[in-house]
Amino acid sequence: MTTAQRLPDPYGNGGGANLADILERVLDKGIVIAGDIRINLLDIELLTIKLRLVVASVDKAKEMGIDWWETDPQLSSRAGRDELARENAELRAHVAELENARGEVTAGGRESAQTSQKTEKEAQG
Image (cartoon, rainbow, N blue to C red; front, side):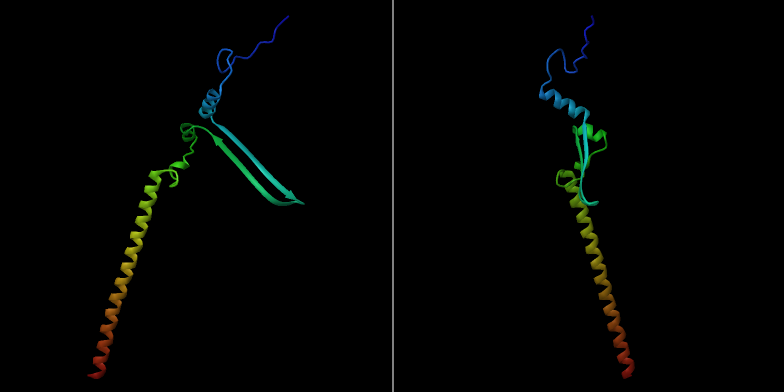
């Protein structure tokens, strides 16, 4: 008579896995949960929910190419500084553009005034 062999316990010798071990394993390997929920009524799509959930450690997420938190100004102080620097550069460019436009108007106004003075002198003389 043969007895069924038991698979090796991945969490050690006979002891059950505690929550910390499971969490460590999940964060180390990562878990992806994906699902779609569609609600149709008479072939008319009323609602579609697409769910994509990734649970992993930061290091594992970076290995997978997921690093959106590094560029989100709400979550990263470095991204906030970059956003502030970009906004500052845009404002400086806009001010320079306005100053150039103002200078052209002023120069154009001077030329126009000089032209009208010449025309008046020619008409008088």
